[in-house]
Length: 353
Ligand SMILES: *Cc1c(COP(=O)(O)O)cnc(C)c1O
Image (cartoon, rainbow, N blue to C red; front, side):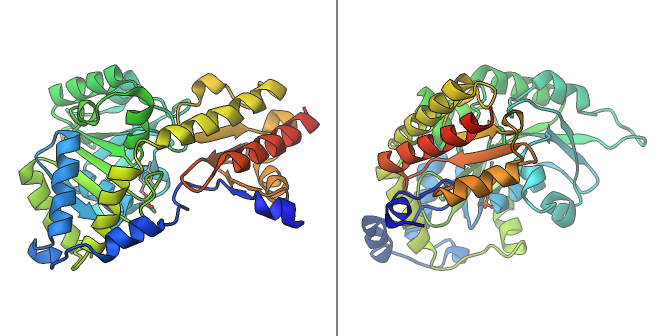
């Protein structure tokens, strides 16, 4: 590969790839710390308070990963032998290694979704709340906002409110997988607390577009967070002087939240460039945030071949299925890399259209 190409290589495989900036590292290095299993780490306590307040919940719990935050959330709502209901592209089903089944004895059913969009009628139709001794009872509905494998899709607030009303009316809880809820907030201007009000528990990630190296939180009522603290320890996630990591999250919330809008604009720029040469590959109107999912099959590509060809041209992405590829914008991707990605993706999709 020539130097020129190497210089503009755009690593768009995921927004988890961001590396901490020098200023973030300095904030981490100087953070006051204590033993968080004893509840004595001031920086963790401050982060938990901040995120609970942002989402309008009583309390929050710092976790090493978003998967752990999700698994704690569903564990609180669903007893072993009960089930959760979600969509068939949900991270909690597709990307957490069967944790709900393995760790908590929870089974799951899912409704088919287009672009990850929440379908309240479909979720309610699947749910079983009068199962008796014949059918598995549904204890929780999980909704993902924004939706990762759906392509960064923002769930409409009204749909989330509707879901919560109807789930609660039938005695079910709602867990919001808000790994990228920050992106929905920045893209729509909807206050985080308005989204937070639609769920009993919410998970959020600091290590995606926000740019922290590690860390997630679960938020909910004080009672639930006390239970979650016990389960976190049981799952092996009790951490000690972890304020050093919480400090990165505090830094990210202060300095790297509003800039998510830049990721959204760059992603939209590429979506429009691709749609101009191949409208079958993507509808820019369905690209809401920082994730671009392209359908490459109509242009004669398999997802694997497409990813290889883009990679050879310095644009790294990820095949999310046999026909779909995903490119994700983040802190470490600038305008020049975005222009390069647009040029490569349009070239590849125009060539076989
Ligand atoms: C990244 C992500 C998570 C959490 O992933 P971890 O790698 O465990 O931190 C959860 N939900 C969604 C939608 C995600 O994209």
